[in-house]
View 1: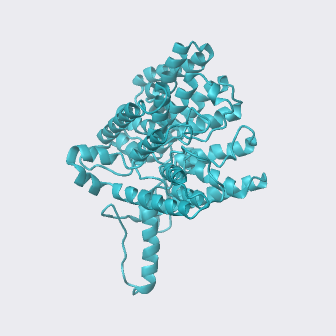
View 2: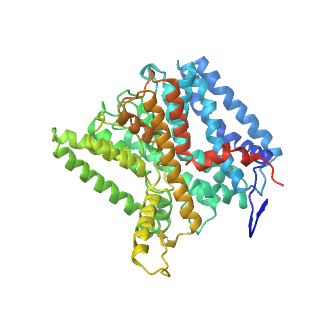
View 3: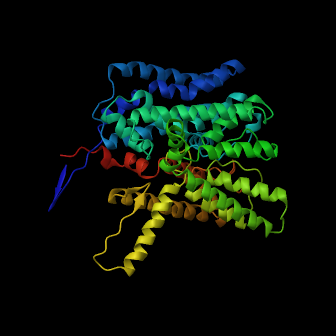
Length: 483
């Protein structure tokens, strides 16, 4: 605690043992990260993969067992909840790296692939993924599914104890709150919805994709808006019907998961009013219309080109990262996709980007600034979000996230330019990484310099954890005791 003249400012430091106990309580959940693909490794007789996946699973199970003797504290601080969430994603990433090395990837590539999966991004540097055993594809899809939503909710829904702890973890996992339920119960409901959408999506894709395992892997990636595909051309070699259905699955989780909870409980009218589904549908529709017009005015105004570009746009808007055709650097539709990737989906969804809710609030801030210039000095202006007055703390947080996004984008872009990478392609892939999308114009691959791979690894983690969460966790001042 520290005191300033005329103002008392209280800041808390993170207690390492409290964070450790909260992490240990996640042991059984973390065991599922490598445990599920380990089952496929055993069935396929992949001994090395079984060991690489089985050992972390066993370790997490042991940790989970011993955590029963030291449950997480009931007075978990806000800063400690932030740290727990960050470390969960870092642990998943580290735990899956050995398996990717067994699959034939160098260390930096394995770390890149694991990070891309955990952050549900979908950028890949794998050179021989088509030759991987089924276990490798299941691993990539599974960690995207977990990183997309499940792990972020698991602490609240099933592991972290009741009371203030669950509430604080919940505050960082989903922004839209259902006032009729506790944070812990809401997390359980959202997790059920996530699993139900996954099951329905698999049942649908099972009939339009060539094999059951491709349906399974792509379902994991699509529901989490991840983007990993077992094929090198993403969705290009599938039928148009399959492409459309996969993108629709991605869009289904671009809206807040709370929409489905309220829909089941109170009906469509209240679900629409309580969430931002109208905005999501509106932006997607307007984007597709603009995309179609741009294609019709281009040199290739064919029906197939209209479909391909529209699906690529929707993939970018949902931050899924699937592509149905190559992206042309500098094309008007590609620039439109960049804008869609930056905005992203709704808060409480699996989508990345700055979130459409924040974009709307930022637009309102600009509008209010204009109105202030035309109003008397004593005039009072307020901003509403979802029918509620916006607090100054919320506005500060929005501006901080946007500032971090822009600053990180510029720093990463400068590094890419120093390495003499194409300017537009570099800008595109950095936005893709920061918004956890996964689309690329072809600039990223096994031959990409290791420094640039590491830059994108940092960008993916920062984007998935929305900058402030990871930066605060890694800050020495977070762990320094205060008198």
